[in-house]
Image (cartoon, rainbow, N blue to C red; front, side, top):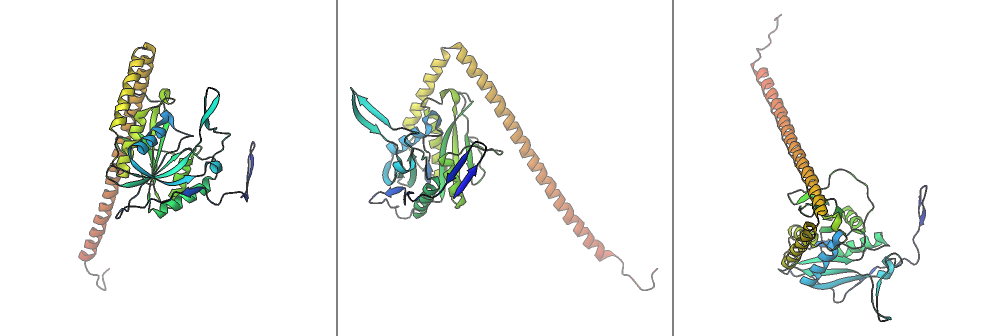
Length: 334
């Protein structure tokens, strides 16, 4: 039993006899890997907590709609989702209830353009049994020989839509490029299940790469397909997958044109965007300056280290030479 106490919180957690033995049902027949395949990435990005611009929803819908797929497992929504917190949508037509759209959480085997498989966990973020769900997912992933985990996320940020901001990266190893920026420093934040799953799998020695696409905060409540395109390009690169993106890129270009037209018609919005551009450009220039300075400092430190090493080796060599050239000591010398 676990008891957590604070000034405003008292929670008592204990294992219940009603805790389900399993949170999922495997689909039959279970998908199997093609012969010779030994690198199956696992991709996850769930909706419900952080999905600015519906980027995760767009990404998963695009993958499921454009690639061959097989269902691996269906997770029990009744066990892991609190319906009173996220109520299912009902459709009423002329006073009659016509349809219900419950929450789903599913694990799929997808095949890229070359036939290479990868696993995708998609659907609603669970409310309950995070530890058990993480353990069961780990077991399924291990059965498929998965070692690489790719987490996807999107977050609202104070950036202008006219600038292509890099994805933020977190993971087992440091990584940074022109298109990807590494999270720096320390921070404490409320975990999503995706982040919690990354941590749990990292503790079991899975290799983690997580990516967060930045969505302009004034467009975060709209469907922002450019963020989904960015996530798909990252997935292609890090997962070594071939994914059709052309149609979604056209949709993203159209969206950007529509946004620009709406803003250009409003001088006040134009001024706001220009101010955001100046702020972003200044921040980026300062960031690049610091990176250059840090790189120069590292080179200088390495040069100093090498110089110290060379100096120590030279000193050692000279001492050996001195010991060989010293005159012999004879008895009676004063």
